[in-house]
Length: 476
Image (tube, rainbow, N blue to C red; front, top):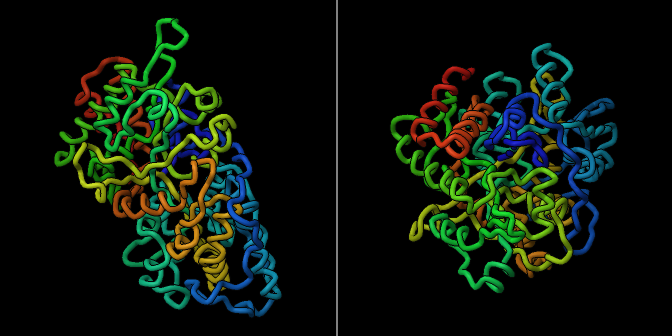
């Protein structure tokens, strides 16, 4: 679900969802978001494997050995951040090899390139790919445009679909009782922390709630270079604020496109959430920074920042990728999303950040073939396991986790991030729905947080101004 500052890492999630402290960064909150760099190559977990040609008997589907086409066809698949090419292409080519007459061309572009080309094709009525990667936070907008094919019952019924994927993953892709997107990865949010510093060095208890986090952050914050300003923090706060809204039980949006945290029913609770978040930043116990730029990755490398609350994908892209310091291998830990207050029900704690699916545009003539390709590639237990082990994709396919949860990662001192994120995904079920105006959320909440932290606005006044901005700009 990601991320407002500059968007590095998870496509333009930064621009869509988080707050920023400058106008230049706020400019990333819409269609001009910063292009995304390629993520570092993930480390394979377990023994390297080849993607399966056919799913095992217990997999959620059977793949035919004859192509459902009568003539040769070239299937175009669009994606970004290696999702179509390095991540999915080995499995896509296994499908093509088993189906004479089918050629699959997996094309990777920048996130904005995909969006602009898709929108141009949808407006023109021609030019869309056979299969496209689709960001969860934009999916509702696409549904308002009526541009995607529903998954036919003959390919996968709704009940089969719901049995295949985590609810957290599929909720945004089910409309009017019909599934439209083949889930790719879980967008569950988790909390990573440096156990060696918090527990071994400082003797602190690991917080189990965001209420306890307030105390821990204060104990960690320090001016290590004695220049008069704190330079060590428990974590940066300029990230997806709506994760904390979800965790506090506040709904985000609906199919009509409303911004529910700011309506009359939820406003007072939203004020309380932002009082805590802005208080952390104003008290300088967290860094009012983004976790996605080069300076932030350096802060993790040099030990200035000791935790991050974010989507599960950051475990490979950030901590084991751009922000990696080999000296810290084995000291990080992963936690499910913390409860809002101490004593809250852990099973009700949870938040969703991002995620994506593969969808078949209505311009596609070879619907049955393309749906069959999607089912084999992204709804298949064995292929989901391959993507997880070889490409570090935290799959949405439930059946993968009996095996994946057994994998112990030495980077996390033997924890299985697959096991923990599957738990986080279960807790995030029903927590998130973007709505067709969701692209505005990051901008209005980011502006509000800037006013609270940088200009000392009253929290309620800043949020009321955010509501006014949203209503002025909403499209639906």
